[in-house]
Amino acid sequence: MELTKRQQLIIEIVKGDGPITGEQIAERLSLTRATLRPDLAILTMTGFLDARPRVGYFYTGKDSNQLIKEEVRRKVVKDYKAPPIIIKESSSVYDGICTLFLEDVGTLFVTNAAGHLAGVVSRKDLLRAALGKQNLEDVPISIIMTRMPNIVTCEPEETLLEVAKKLIDYQIDSLPVVRKVSNGSKTAYEVLGRVTKTTITRGFVELGSEVTV
Ligand code: ADP
Image (cartoon, rainbow, N blue to C red):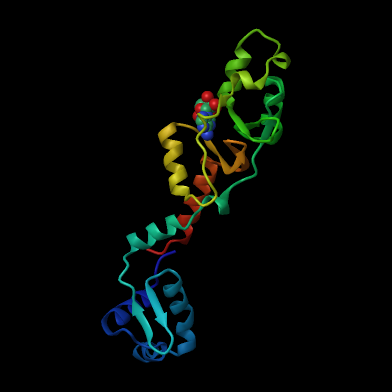
């Protein structure tokens, strides 16, 4: 969304003469207060202007770059995560391949008997296993999975930006969203969801349609 000529004019007026009331801005533009209301709402929502009761509107001094950065940092994992697709450690590679197709995902998370994160299996892990001559129903998924503690995870409060950096740095397609739970003296992880390259792409597309520059 781009700023309209009128919104840009409002910013100029507030920049020059703020704090200024909505009434006064309307007067300067020879418009009614009601006509201006949506513009003022957009400009405060997007962070260009701030409003204080009984004082009026003032310019926040934030440029488009700062506002975009703030918008990016507002996108957090818990608002975007998808349900995790989980398979038990005791399953076979054959079960894994079926689950991958049935659930239409690229990565499976593997949990142990206690229901805690034990491993991750990607499509290439499964393809590699399928290249061998063994009967895939006899090969346990735990043999081919990437296992703890080598799993890169994220938490619900992390930003999508932090997750995107992890996906790039570790050259992987998805991360389990986890919560730490205590398991005797050890730390274990409960799987709450998944974030993938698709999640990041969705956040990016949303950003493109939301941000006012
Ligand atoms: P693919 O290899 O199918 O394209 P990935 O790039 O996600 O999928 O996986 C590459 C390798 O990294 C695989 O061996 C996989 O087990 C492992 N992997 C995938 N996700 C993670 C993760 N979150 N943490 C650690 N290793 C992972």
